Image 1 (cartoon, helix red, strand yellow):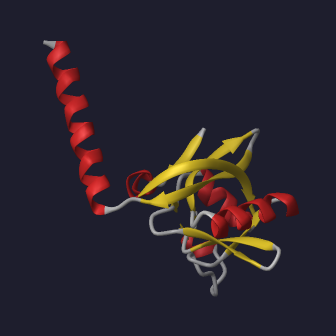
Image 2 (tube, one colour; image 1 turned 45 degrees about the vertical axis):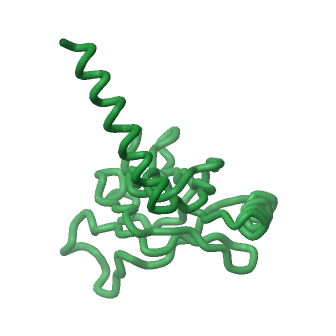
Image 3 (cartoon, helix red, strand yellow; image 1 turned 135 degrees about the vertical axis):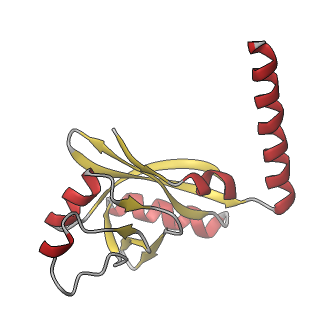
Length: 146
């Protein structure tokens, strides 16, 4: 079951590869994410040392009055990946100048998972071409309906 999707990432980046990771969350954050109070807009993944982190993801509290006073909804969250997966991502990101982008958050056997994409940034012309292509497909679909 999908909980959140980063629609902007599919427009701004040409996704080359996808990878699944777990997210280290606090108990009250889990309940908030399962209720859909997560926003991936503007978030990204970085690798520091031997660990991967999800940066700038907004998780609003499930019950604002019951959350700790010092809770930061934009705090950095550690991603649960194997050492070999982290080395692979680091190598790919440096070697081919790809960016690590969070694509979607979903449930898998009642566990919260994050889909990370290795993407190359699109140029403005590529974005215009993509919009034109989508528009053409939409027009063809509408013509078929009539």
